[in-house]
Image (cartoon, rainbow, N blue to C red):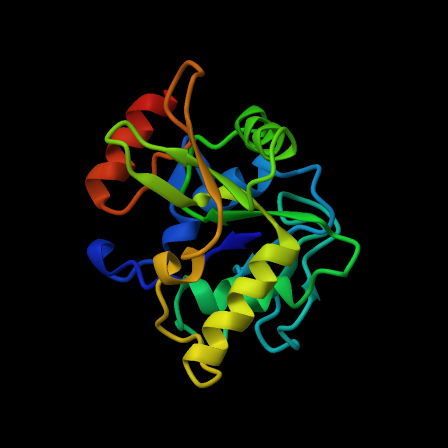
Length: 210
């Protein structure tokens, strides 16, 4: 599940998921890292090649290209934040889906191998989720994989505490009470948790992508 509904205020409100790095939109690079996932879900404004007038719940993307087979939906309300977006995305998953990746749409160096390492870490233990930890020791909660039942229960708990609304809720509050393993990146090259929050981050990513 790729969360693409942020306002990108530090970048002047641009369509950040559509910003190219190495010639490919950030959104497409993240979706490519989970190309083997079924289904793949994008939560946020419809990309340019999606008909914005069509119903937005479970809308299927084109049959070809980087968005082929991706389901697109929108958090309620639009711009309601990552927790509301996670809830909207989970609503599209069937009861037979045991694990979901929860990913920001601005991770230019996330790779299938990096996602596999997260999944392996989850399978090897009893934690509710596994996330990457950055070089400063900070948990990157939107670069991780989660057991769907635990994430659904956390969303239900938080919605109950907030009178039914998840708009504006923080990811930290959502994950409070869940057992999370923080995984350091042991691979080579740019770290998969690197995100593009500013124009300078994009310039740095472009240099790494050359």
